[in-house]
Length: 186
Ligand SMILES: [Zn+2]
Image 1 (tube, rainbow, N blue to C red):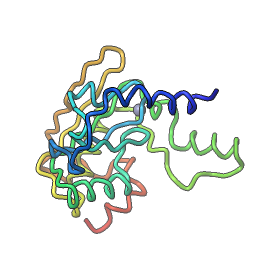
Image 2: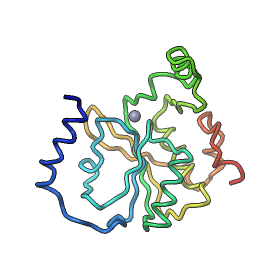
Image 3: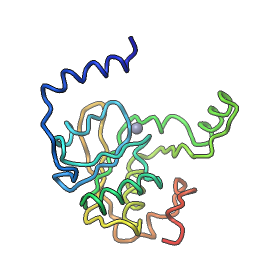
Image 4: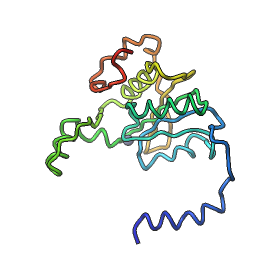
C-alpha cells in the first residue's frame, strides 16, 4: 500500500466532516501565499475554515510568475483582495544556494534546471521581497499585502514589518529577483 492509497482511503473519513457545497469565491476575500512545508497546516494555524481563503503554495512560498497568475485569478475572477505571505523557519530553501541546487540536479539527472531554486538565507528579507513583488505587480487589485514567518519549532506566527513598503525602490534589486520576468517594465 502506498501513501497515496492511504490518502484515497482516508477520504471516506473526511466525508463525515464535509461542510457541504460552498461558493467558489473565498468567504473572507483573502489569499495566502505560503511555502509547501509539511509542518504548516495553514487552515488550522490561521483560523481558516473550508471556503474561507485561497491557498497558493510552492517551495519557499516565493512569488513567481505562476504565483502572480494565481493571485490575478483569485482577485479578478473570485473577488479576493488581501494577500498574506507565510514563510517559515528551517525552510528547505535555506539548505543550498541556487548554484548548489542546480549542480545537484545536474549531477543526479544529467540536466541542469532552467529555473532557479530561489534559495535564501534571511527569511525576513525574503518575506519583504515577496511582499514587494506582490505590491509591484501591475495586474493585481490587492488592498492589503502582509507577510509573516512561522516558527516550525513553536507554532508561533510572527508578522514581518515592512518599513520599506511605501518606498518600492528600496526593496528592489535583491539577488533573488534575477529572472523575475514580471518585474520588467513594471
Ligand atoms: Zn519552506
